[in-house]
Length: 224
Image 1: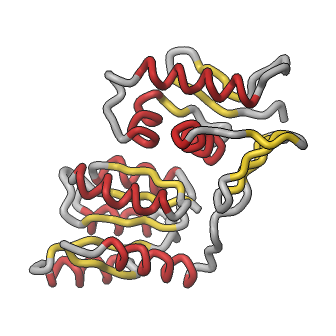
Image 2: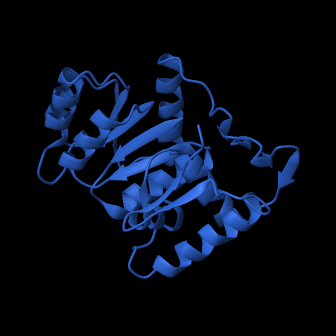
């Protein structure tokens, strides 16, 4: 399942993302309202976690525009304890739940699970690109009848690529999602890890499932 976190405080965003990823959710993070709205309208998320105090476009406005555009994903808003009026506005704009800061991560996870259950969500399903199959629950990866072994970072990178199959992922996106670091200092490391994955997944095959998109990044793509 895929969750969008719209939060402008880097430490809070990282804290939430890591906790969600440990529960086997795929997570995208946006740090301002405009990009959060764009991603919410572009990708079919299972849940959106939205801070109301955002730079540029406020969270309530993001929520109003998303609902007006037909975004149906459940939304959990994050507010400060003193912002009663903002909580009310958020709920009136279409939020399904709210959580006040500071919060215990266990409560956020419990509320997220409740919203996903209410929306008919289920645990993350099997991912497959051609004959590469990844089970997010057991973390087992196979290609054909062969089981493949990966380090923790290799697995995280592969899962991110497979959850976004047929979509170009920039090096910046990969660095932020997999390593939680800035892109500039990690360019070569990303290329090295892509090479590691190719050696394990595509060894002995004519074509690599992980395609280099020149000037952009990488994409996991099937022949079909």
